[in-house]
Image (cartoon, rainbow, N blue to C red; front, top):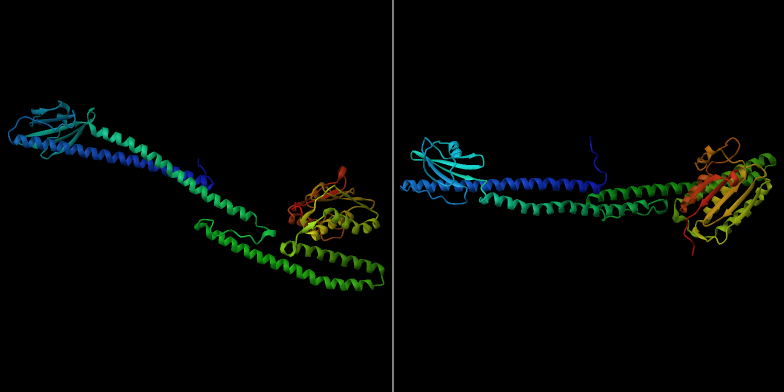
Length: 437
């Protein structure tokens, strides 16, 4: 079964450093153990060779007494002939070691069990020196074991410190990346001038920040060109529409005149909405000012009331107490409320009651008791260029999408739901603008 690597950079650093620390500790301990055993074995072999040379020199001088250099009680020196008969000995008797000793024409080291031995030909016989590694008084193995314990006590904390340093470094890196990510998350249509800081990320990640800033510059330039073009087109269309409107007033056929005037007014209204949208895409073009929502709603309702009453519908205004003013784009908010009232007028039958509510808080809502729309259409009402009944109602299909965009430009949104008592519709704008001073 394949184990997936952790996606977190910090977790990858921890896993990698722990693995490296464990491998390094094992390799260091194994290397130290091997080196120390080789050093101890080399020391022991030199001691055995020196002992044999001392005994050989004494035999050449005619001395028969064997006096071994005592490293421990485990040292034994024996002189034997070709039949392995003992001609002299000092130390523990080891007949099995003597039986295993090689009797060649050259000095040779050999091992029999836990005993390290050395045989060297002298005259007509051999001198065999041996050392028992398991003897309690042998100090070489004690030195090795004692050193390894102390070496492990030093190595393990150092090995544990390596991943800890890696965790600290990875933590610092992730904190910097989170800081840059928070700055990137704040970049939007209303803050398109924000760029990622240079110098905060590591050198390896700096090219990514520079490339991102360059891409944001290109996007900002393209957005500016697009919105400026839309604004220019809208401004250019206003003059011809005004001329057409004047010419329409001179038409004698009232039916043709009324139809033409309605078409021109509708086009003028779409152009006005496009201008507001273009300005919303460039927040610097619109200045936020204190907006009293209750007074704004009162003006919009007063402006729309005559046409609504003429269409045999009613409209009422309800305002909560002490609705605080907010910092916002008053022209855009007024346009959003006008769109909601106009939608409630166009999509409801005669006799419908329309209620505009202000508050509580920074909220504006328009409710009606009309026939409403099917549940399947509620989620699509804010889609741009979508109309539920194109064969019955004239319109561009961008009214609610513009309202939603205006609400989002103020940090809020648009919600469309069933009206009071389950009849009609209620469209509610929530504005999270800063309270005005």
